[in-house]
Image: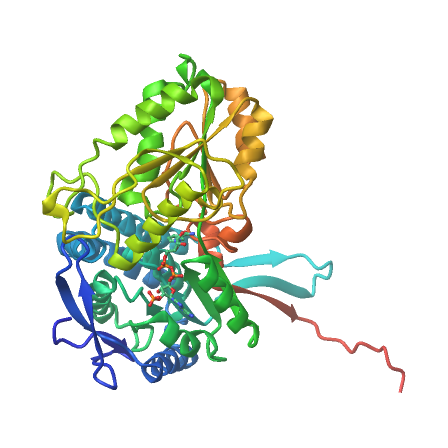
Length: 504
Ligand code: NAP
């Protein structure tokens, strides 16, 4: 950053081989937050080769599991030590508020702590009875090999940590590529990793870092026969491209993609039973979509509300949406920050135009804020469209901005049908005071995470991922570790005999 080398390849920091750099823009005011090295495809190939050489050398994967677990714990300690620095970089880079960035760093820490425990406790061997006492048959887990880890811009370090922590714990080597828009926290984090690696004598080439344009580096990272696994988080179109490219080498790919997440509110939220509550439902409906200005893959962008309460409920949410305080994420008074870039704001604005042309009723927002203090940033007002229906593109496509669409239903079956009427299937929320109904509806919804009387939470120990076009594979939880492991069956005959099948 700012003149220091930013590419980390084979244990050495270096500049891009062609001297290329990129300005990283602070979306709160359009200023240049940092200048970073921009890798070339040749640099990316070198990073893959370094990861390959390190894996094939075998030293890292032979490191005792307890030592790998201790390393993950040490990384967690260093994350807490450097929390303010990392959170500040995340805010400058993404625009999110410092409070959110601090939560992100705590979450990153919890991911490393979780995998430290899981890896350390992992019974890495299963004995199988094959019916012959002379045979010792066992299934062991081995690291999958060289991993390419590609992350998006909305939760830069958090999404990367969901990959790096299990990959390290499993004994893999890797090349990490953050989004070209938001590389700063990942660069700082790899410096932190280097410190931990020195303490634990981790061999060179276990973690490599390149940043730059995905379109330019993608081929070098994903079409290589030296890569054993690609873990990608980002948009659907990119995930499709990577999956197709990787297919030539039959490289395993896990893609975590977008979402168009329903939040279903039943009229009985007025009730006083378990988990009901009008205010909580409205508040989570608001937060579920407008936190981080809607730039969250699991944002509750589709409010699906029972007709009998819809007018009053939507009016209450809209009134609060209009009062959200926007501003620079470094200002403690800001409740939400800008969109990540001018380019992204233009995409969101195009969706608002589309919603209007599709006949949805704009009830709040639909414009840039008029506050002169926000004029240089890529801010956009929380926007709500009422009277939407499933034929509209703003209801079906991921807008990835502060846009809430409202659909109405009259029966439980209709609510479920609406909730499942999306090509995605990442997350959903259900609000009701009738717990029997709540259980029926959460089970009927085809989404990877479903919140009943809550919205937006996840934990390192529970799997995260999507149904449908929200992706395949899972991150976090035991499955998030298993993605980075191969299962090997070892059949050991302790009393070898001839098969005797062929007579001559
Ligand atoms: P994106 O445009 O698909 O980019 C994601 C990453 O892929 C970036 O690092 C990007 O690099 C890189 N990339 C682009 N083209 C590539 C190629 N041809 N080969 C290899 N890598 C390539 O997504 P985004 O706009 O950064 O992120 C927003 C999306 O991520 C949304 O759809 C959101 O829902 C999704 N997301 C999903 C989850 C989840 O858990 N399911 C979590 C967070 C975000 P550049 O930045 O240089 O283009």
